[in-house]
Image (cartoon, rainbow, N blue to C red; front, side, top):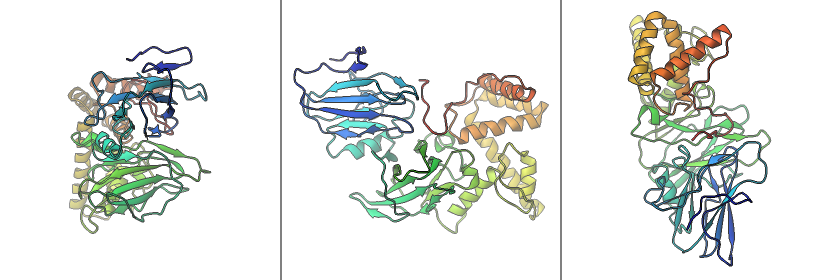
Length: 422
């Protein structure tokens, strides 16, 4: 029997308390920069209590099934959304579940894509916890339960199911994945160890290095670690793991700021020396984001700092007219393809009409939209009213008036996951 009401001590009763408690397990849900249950599993006996303690941001503890990790089980318990403000430091709200059998109980957070990012938990999972998490993330990724303080860059270690390859992300003065390209077999895992500053790793595609794979190829969910802020003084580092399911190349990037445009990309199983090598992938990331240094001397500029025709012309210097024209046509086609992915029909038609009046304004809007897509800030395709709202903001910013709040930006602070709107 379950109750959805809060008690005066800020406990949400998910089950009736037994007369005698054998043990109480405390599980921390979320917290600054974390999409985890900690610990991610417990072994409990009938009569034991599992106490979910909800920390910063907005999470749930919702019962699911092994076969459908991210879908609420019929009749299963659900804490509901429990938002916790950033300034809260104690007195966190909690929810209690009473264990009634030794059978596994599967749990997930139903906020946004948290489950798909590996935010799952289990009671009495036995040997199936890793498989449960893999199913939740589409068989692609899982998050580690706790950070580790050791790292051997690029050195594989043996595991029960394959080889674990360690990749260091960032670090003092470093915008790199180290190593940047690895070779992995089916069953291997790639563990990303996040060093100082604030980085993330998101699956992308070779053709669009700095855009989430889920936006360019909706049929493939890809993976997204979320941001991992690490202070300069930190000596223990959080990790996040991807399981390799086939030997096709894996492409990924860091969406923080213009890190991708500066070449902070990663690949697995890229064929070196070919047209789709890691170097070609990195060069394309720099080229599209306007950070490639060329004979024209243009460097460290984002797409909105210089018009696309100027960028294309500078990048083409030293090439013959035919090659330069082909490069420009390829870039324009890629730009159109990406906009088709993120705009609905009405929005595309409106942008086309804007282009007839002011091509420069249309390019400015396109640049903003593409950067939002690159950072994973678009929840769904942009509609015409939302595009008009964005245009109003741009115009307001130019004439000094206060811009209206847009409805298409997924407001995410760069240091933590911000999911209060549900």
